Image (cartoon, rainbow, N blue to C red; front, side, top):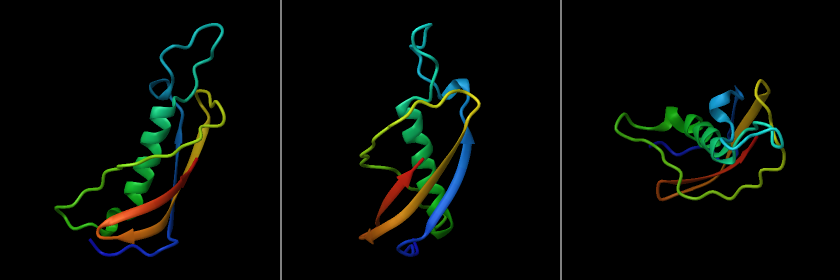
Length: 99
């Protein structure tokens, strides 16, 4: 892997679909983007940020997440994700991700 530039930012968007929502929605709770799916989309954003730096036999995988999911997002809304490289050491990359 080539070393990523500290501070580099990658952005992507996705539209919330039924497959992204909580499974326990009912009349009292609307179907909104689930936290696990938000984390998956943020991890995808981080992976895509460094995809071009990986050798053909390399992949990335998240190992630690700290998240505050502050608002519900319903089906049809666009969510913009960003991943900023904060650090790189011994093959490990630290990101700040936002949606």
